[in-house]
Length: 144
Image (cartoon, rainbow, N blue to C red; front, side, top):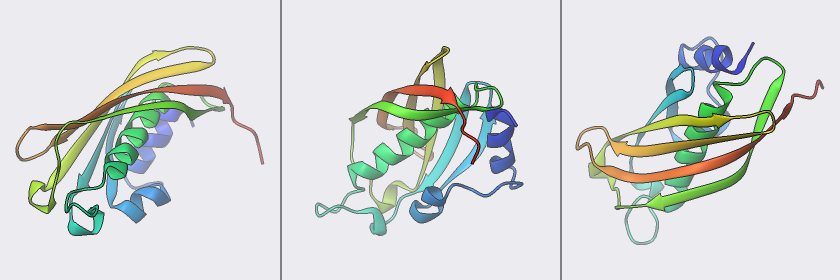
């Protein structure tokens, strides 16, 4: 399968969600060429010592959406790895924030590098909580 077909198989339940998404409670809900959408629920289990959702959770959501946006444009037999991740945290989230929606968009897919941008938005309040960019290395998938 190419990257888009694989991501769509996850979104529609034919393939399992990534283990990290099960651990942290977020889900890939859709994939189109160059664009992916994840959804996540906030909760106290994600809190830092200040009583807000940990910044690392936002970084993980963004890294997942950014990488999958790149993956959605890869042909069969190709893989990616995050080479650079930039995260901007704009406002705190709490359990009361509720569902978050994370949209990743590929900007450039070349032979060896891909770039993407993503945003974390409150599904109920429409506020921007975080955004980020990535550069991904693109390489042939090694058969095991």
